[in-house]
Image (cartoon, rainbow, N blue to C red; front, side, top):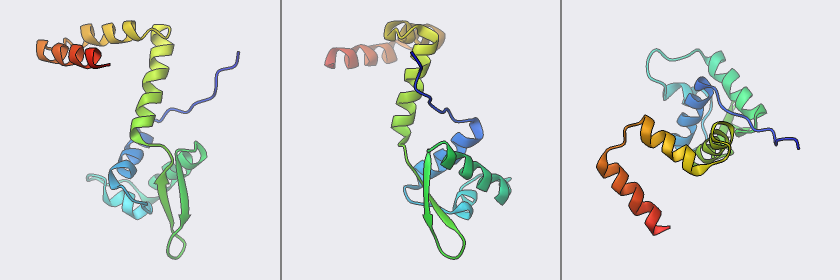
Length: 125
């Protein structure tokens, strides 16, 4: 059985996606750069990341003014997070949700109040 090919984002690609998700509107390369903290990356760097994200089908673009393109996410942050967690659960925990949760409960040293919040969430389901 061949696994459906999914793409994960590199740290730099995720940074661009976080900017697009937070913007809530289409941005051109300059609009993305403007939202970076200093020191800001070069225009060509951001343009390259946007091209990669387009090829990975994470963003789409439409013609902007002049030669510019306006980029928009094709996937929401929530959906990307869900897919990433699903892959992690399958790759590291043999698809077991309980093993996945147990790992984070132990590794993160979750506080009593956080555990109570999780129990309440489980009980509501």
